[in-house]
Image (cartoon, rainbow, N blue to C red):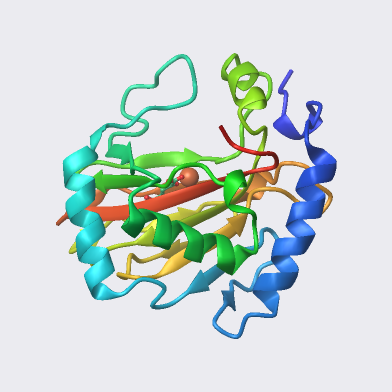
Length: 225
Ligand SMILES: O=C(O)CCC(=O)C(=O)O
Ligand SMILES: [Fe+2]
């Protein structure tokens, strides 16, 4: 029997629906937001969210903090997420400023967001198709449940131009987004009713030439700690 994750109990469903509505309303009213035309998932893009100098500064910080990326799944799958990543110090004024700008854009309280993570992919490195929301039948959920619960929205920014490869592909929606420095992607990991949206499946495809740098901020339904 195949168990799809949408048939599992959905903790935080009401909160996800509520947060979904609030953020959707705010983004759709924002003239800077471009909404990807699909009814499968709510995906928005903002051009020039970060300046060139902010992008440069962030890539330098990623080089300082990056260590091999972790996966939430207990059984580590070889080759699944081969990038290097690390969390920025959320108290550093520069990071706090960027973090607040993302909170503001979404209209979400800053204590709901995880620490911003920086990520670097060298040629051959990738993040295979995955969902950002937690699989609540996995052992890690017991920990995540207590530190903020289910993930709601994701905000991810590209920091540089990649020579070849390294696109962000939403495999179920059928779009492939090329890294452009300063562009911020924002998407709802849940459906409007608060159930996990399987169609938010996405991948960082292998970098073929050059290096790829991104930052990601994941939001929870409750206070993150
Ligand atoms: O690097 C990418 O394009 C995708 C990154 C990603 O999926 C994530 O940080 O959750
Ligand atoms: Fe992701």
